[in-house]
Length: 495
Image 1: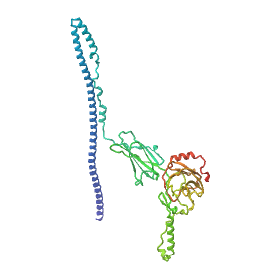
Image 2: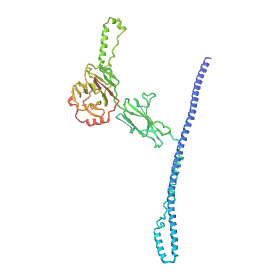
Image 3: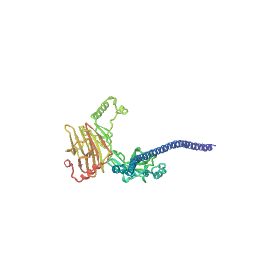
Image 4: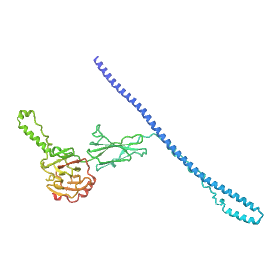
């Protein structure tokens, strides 16, 4: 009995689930019927509107052509009636002369005849009949205004519902990724004059393969593209790849998306290591601001800690229960920069390839430096003051100067001070170059041999700066580096 009940319960559960499925499907069918009714009414209204528009165009064209026929008929009628009136008057005058001439011929008096003959001759010479053109000024033919709508009729008879556009194909070989821009090109299997525009979608990803069930970044949409290519500009490449797809749209419907195409977007990405930065530097993401109270706060906390530890309230027994609040420690493996080394490093080492990043700084900063450092840069070392770092240094203390520094040697740079500097590193070639980031004008190049990984390094005193990463090496920089690769070192005086 118990087994039968359990079996019956399973059957009822299965039936209940199936009933729920059927109920849901019935709801979907009802909704589909409602949608069908609404969609049918909509497309029928659109069809009637289009035909009404077509009729309006035909009516306007007919009215225009009928007007032209009437104008042509009126113009020719006027010409022919004018010529007819002139001919009628000339004929009337000529008949009167003919009658006078006949009467003169019948006269028997010689004196009167001679004078009359002379008068008739003069009148004939001046008669309108002899100055008329007997060729019609206008033709009665209207064949030049005949029409033949055979071709147009065939076009009208060929009117059909708009087909769904074909699926485009992204031409990977024609796509380009450079200078933080991406140009995507695509083509249809066959030309389609009904295409109105294309919609391109793209999203960032760190995975080269097929899309996953849940991606980290959403699709971004570019609508209304009229050509078969599009260029995305001003991008920051903070992922390894970008995925693209495109669809064609006519006036009524959009086609299917193309196959996904993934393009590599190589760029140098790093963050600032706040854990090892000087305590007077306030680090937030990729921005740094001088904070004169940063070190004082820590010192006050340490003083409070020492005072409380000396208090009777902090006996070993109490300390075990109530520990004082500890100051957040630096990142494991590196002590904070201290003393006058107002330095912060990036969190990513460079041990191969060509990399590029930019830094925007406050030109009113008392001191600012940007460059590269080795991993063993001392916590007391200022950038450019040892053989473990290379930098460009801005000094606004007493007088303004811009210098290239390495191993405690400096070279004054004779160039305008920009508000944004681009930093280029070619690890294999041992090249470290600094550019005016706006004009891409070369400011200085260190040429050395990197024997161990290097890391982006920054320093600021009484000022601020922000770093921009995710940038590709600009093509103009690469071109300039190739031209200058065979030239002599530009830091001979610093080594």
